[in-house]
Every structure is written in structure tokens, then in C-alpha cells.
Image (cartoon, rainbow, N blue to C red; front, side, top):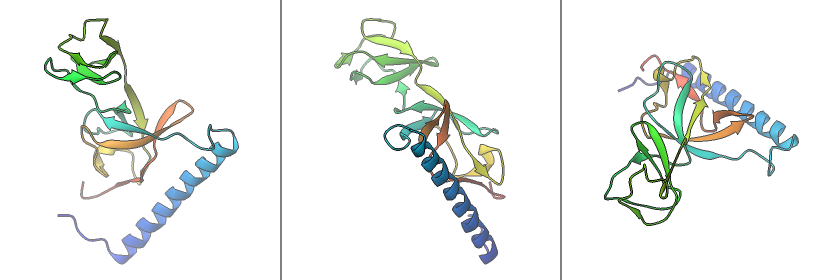
Length: 160
């Protein structure tokens, strides 16, 4: 169980959150003024491929949480699976029992992106909150080729 924040620490945390939210709003407004497409950034879902490491980036699947391929599972067109570290996309509906090596049914490719996450008060995701584990969903946006977290800020914690 973590310890409760003192009033001073709570005020400090609130100030950091206001600062972070103001930065997101500034970025959004700047992008909107400069033709960011549709009046703002497009938000996507990303799913962590593994638990967070010591850096400020994490590998994620874009728009779908990939699962391990299974011969008894029926896949729809556009479903993604993973086999031995390689991503495959189903080309047809009712894809049942077709090996990922069958090019008539599957296309190999990548559905993996690297997400950069700002961490208030630190630089290591494995010592920040909220915790990122395999399968954790993040809201992300593409900032000129760099995928960034679009959700709440991450905070370092002495209790991590």
C-alpha cells in the first residue's frame, strides 16, 4: 500500500498536472492552427507489447492488441496475430485453420510503433506511474513521425 500524499505534495502534484495539461493544450492549438488535419490530432489506441523498461519509450501494437495465432480460431479481415515475433494481418473474413505462411490468407508486416512518453520528474517508465504492462492500452497520436502518449501524464514515484 502506498503512503498518502501530504497537503504540500498534493498541491505540487496538482501544479504539475496543470502544467502538463497546458502543454498538451498548446500543442493541440499549434497543430490545429498549422493544419493538423481535421482541426486536430487523430488519436489512436496502442497496446504495450511488454512491460515498461528503463527508458522513456515503449513498443506497442497500433490500433489492435495482437494475439498469438491459433489454428482453431476464426479471424476476420484486418485482424492481426503474432507468430515468433512476426506480425501477420488476415486478408479475408472467415480465416480458419490457414497457416500464417499462406500468402493467400495472411500478409506479414508490422503493426508495431514506438511510443515516447513524457515523465514528470524523471525519465524511466519502469519507475513511473501508471505502470505499463503487456497489453496495457494507451491513447497515442503521431507528432510529425514520433508517436506520443495522448493520455494523462506519467509521474515518477519513490514507492515504485
